[in-house]
Image (cartoon, rainbow, N blue to C red; front, side):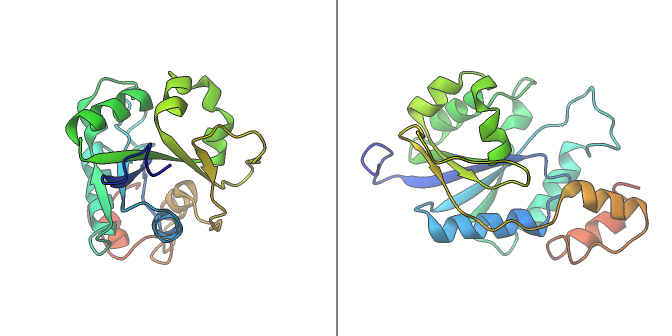
Length: 199
């Protein structure tokens, strides 16, 4: 594996999502993967806002980027990645991977996806080429069954702990006027209150 994926290159895990908002579960998962895999860094690839979606449902790109930057401020092995902000919608993972390959020839990229996305992976754009050219790490998600049987050669499963936190639940608590500070990284709750996000 090390030879195929570049023993002398930085090993970067790509953790994609809307992060609407980012929460402690996202950070805990990234810490676990950094500790239990050979990844040097994890980049949080923030999905762009779909212009057809309600603004109240998904905050604009800048607001979500601000929260992710705040959450990662004290995590030196975690970075924000806004490459998809510059790309045509919809954002296809294959295009994101190829763009990052071109921009960062000194890095090797590993795709980090939840078990729910792995179940639907055969429907992804150019999924066969992703499997053939990139390492994929699959982590548990509530309600998703991940089988280790007959996995492709470059796909691995990690038994990361499941934390009972979701962005949907956080948005619901905000709408009800409830406290969320225990659910989000330090500083993120303050940003949400200061800018009135999800009100």
